[in-house]
Structures are given as C-alpha cells and as structure tokens.
Length: 383
Image (cartoon, rainbow, N blue to C red; front, side, top):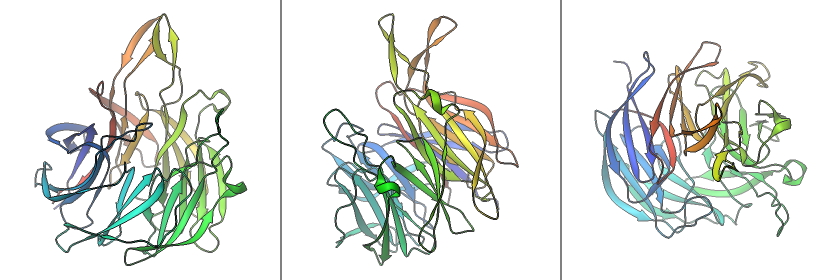
C-alpha cells in the first residue's frame, strides 16, 4: 500500500489538516484543532503516529508569557487529537526536532540561546528533562538538527545585525556532540569570526556528507562538508537581484530534495512603504531559489527562482516522495498593481517538482491571517 501524507498548517493556535492529492497538486481542508497557544514549530515521531508541537503566545519581537510543549495523535484520516500531558516551557521556542529513533525531543530557544532536551517514552509520551552541561550558545539560536548517525547536533545561531545602539552580534553554527540526550560543545563554525554570517536553518544531503545552510541576514546559501574540519565550500546569493535588496529581505527555510539532486531556499520579505496614507509592500523578493547539486562535488548551482505569489514564505516543505513543494506565506500585505492597491492574503502555494528539480506553480490557497501569522506548515506521514 502506498504511504499517504497529510499537510498541516497553523494560523496562530489553529492547526489545520489538509488531505493531499499529489497527482492533482491539491490540498483539501479536512479538520482543525485548537492548540494551547500559537504554533511555533512541529515535528513527527519517526515511527509512531505522533506530532510534537512547540507553542507560545510570543512571536518575533514579542517574548510572550505562556509556552507549551504538547503531543498530538494522528488519526487514520490525518485529523489530530491531543495526547497525554503538556509541558510548560521556560521561554518562546523556535524549533523542535527528534533524533532518528525519537528517543528524545530537542527544543531551541533564541533568547537567550540554549537547547533543552526531553526524553520520550516507548509509547512516545513526553518524559523528563535531560539536564545539560552545555554552556550558553551564540546569540539567537534558530534550529537544531541531528546529523545522520545522531552523534552530532547542529545548531545555527543567527546573530543580529548592528543597530544604532549596538554592534553586530556575530553568527555561528554550533557543532555539538550528542550521546543519549546529552549535548557537549565540539566545534564552532564562524567564517570571518561570524561577522556578516547569519545562519538560520540547515539541511543534509540524503546520501553524502554535505550540509546546506540558509544564511538569513545575508540572503545566501552556504555549503559545508560534514566530515573532517566541516570546511566551508561556497556561499551563493539566493536573490534574483541582490543589488536591489529591500529592507526586511531575509533568507528563510531550506530543504534538500529527497533524491538529493536539488536544494531549495525561501526568500521572504514583508517590508512596507507608505503610499497615500497606507502601508504598501515594498517590492522585496518572496520566492523559492532552486539549486542543482553536483553529484560529485555537492556544489550547488542556481537554476531557478520561483515566485511564491504570497508575502513572507516563512516555511515550506517538499513532499517526502518528492513530487510537490508547498510554501506558506505568513502574512497579508497591500501591494500596488495596475495603479491601485490590492491585498495579497496569506496562504499556501502549491508547486509541482519536475524531474530536474525545477518548480511549476499550480495554485494558491488563501488563508485568513489578519489576526495571527501563518507560522508553520509541513507534511506528515499518516498511520
């Protein structure tokens, strides 16, 4: 029997379940579950029909005061039910992941940068906190991924741009050793001391020791070797026209195609200018940059930049079997079109993926994000 998948998208605390029809490139809303607070990130247990949801009433530039980790059970049709007890978290989480056997769940906090680890029972239920000897990390951690083999954890720390009141906080990629839920420092990757280096997310090649990095603050894609000294191999722009970059232009999520032939990075922008008394989108790039991966060297080459037809694609995911890509545009904005103002709504943009990895836009499903952001979206296998 062919594995089936659902697609999930969260507007604030409302987590929506969509049926997926890959051949038709369609999503059909099935159900909705209210979470304790707004979803920040979601990950799936590797073998059990469970999702782990990191929730908070905070958001960028707002710390919030209520932060929760909870488990959700996936029903046969993809709809969700709350499962077991929830855990109170100490701050707003921005990323959550498990190891390859889902023995532990790892949570990243950006303020201050740190990682917490919780055990998972044989039934997938949330367990006890695993105390860490690890010191604090570089500023503004944004993700944790366990590299293939689970013995190494990767934590990109974005840093912060300089402002009128403070100098730049340099960025870095923290490489940590992992043994039974314990993380210890090993190596820090910081080209040029971490200045002008703002890594956000990483992904790994499925068959080679290559790591690809979205560099948020500089709108770039980087490649590192995963063996030896973790050598930096390249840095490339993700933008169609980097010489005309607008304020609030940022690189976002990154995903390698399951076949390993392509890597995708989102460009996201939501800056505005005032026109006739209204805040109007400033014209930045909201696109998916597509790179072909050389099968011998791993080096990426830009082959396409695809318009998402939305504003600020904070997250996107490739279908686990490779035929679809869905990006989630986080927020609405007014834009100028034909001399008049038109509101572009938040929503889900569906692309088919050609054999060469390039994208063909098929359709966009508008969603109401006027009160809360469309903050996370992704696929999960059904039981």
